Length: 97
Length: 198
Image 1 (cartoon, chains in turn green, blue):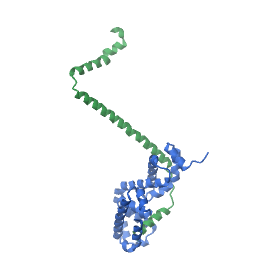
Image 2 (cartoon, helix red, strand yellow):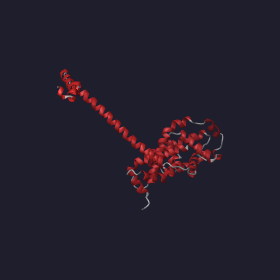
Image 3 (cartoon, rainbow over the protein chains, first blue to last red):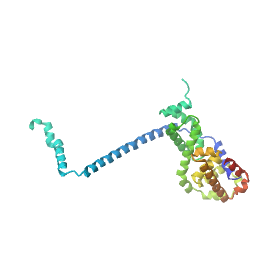
Image 4 (cartoon, rainbow over the protein chains, first blue to last red):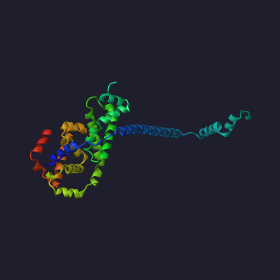
């Protein structure tokens, strides 16, 4: 007997072994659903990362354009005027103005 | 209403019909399990591999061209089994039973019962790299031609030939370690078989 005979004997033996009962349909469908969900998740993560990168690029471009102090101050003033307490009061009770 | 055929079920599976795919799985699970037993011994591992084959087949269904579905499934099963071998190689190496090997070396191979032969072959295959194992499995254990083995493994025919030659040499060395002079014992027959296949 040589190694090839042993390999053949092994193959024949595995082939002749009685099949053990196996039922995997339910588990297979479950795994398919899980994988389908996990395919969506990375896409969402990718979209989030993309949005962050885009925001960072916008900030860098804005800073590299060397904005003057005045324009930043005026932006801040505009923000206070539109969302600050005085602006809020004018909305709640316009007759007070 | 007509009974759903395999092709109908495949077409419906492709459209996302889970019930149709469950019927496909039920029809072929035993056949796939029989094949996966060549890659793993543990029933739990076999079941896991069978599941993996059907999950992979499902996501590859769009690439399946009508024809030989069992053959296509066998191809997927082969690749899943090969991946399993690559993944578990380290574990197999660390799990060697030296005492069993020593006992085996003292016994005659001709006198071994079929269960011990199976264990011996599995143990020898475990000592080989997954590539060598795969080629031995396809060409010698299952008796596929070089062309068929190449198709199932997804390799070129040349690679299968080269790998078969190397695997044979290693296996022969392992047998020599066990005290089996395979070259002498085999006589001309094994060489003839190999040349015929190549």
